Image (cartoon, rainbow, N blue to C red; front, side, top):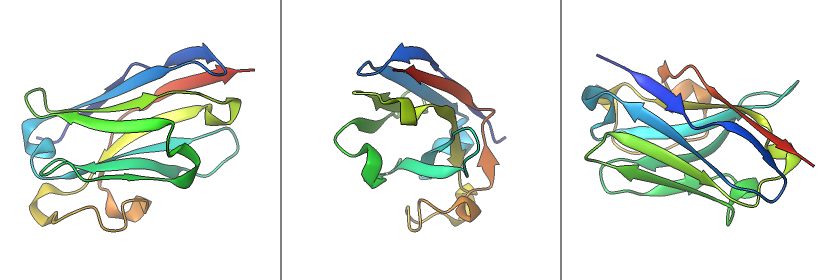
Length: 129
């Protein structure tokens, strides 16, 4: 069964921190590329970060490097996105996404929406100036 459930969004002032979580079913989590995407008002959905759950390799878009950290907890089948030094332009709905587990061999093209078949419902992050 495929399941992705995000939590942890909220409102924060610029410069603050938030951590969002993506709890996955065991089937979805194991040896998969799990990514965080975001979609701001009037913007296209964009890749933020990804992690390969088998081995822990991580990937980031340039605008969040050195501010965001993606991590995993294998015991909880959960992927986290720690967001520090938040900026108003980080305001968006944040979604986690996973690939079909049976065909995953890594996080190639991790930023491409087309590589993911499963999506969570999203969690809102709002950063005020």
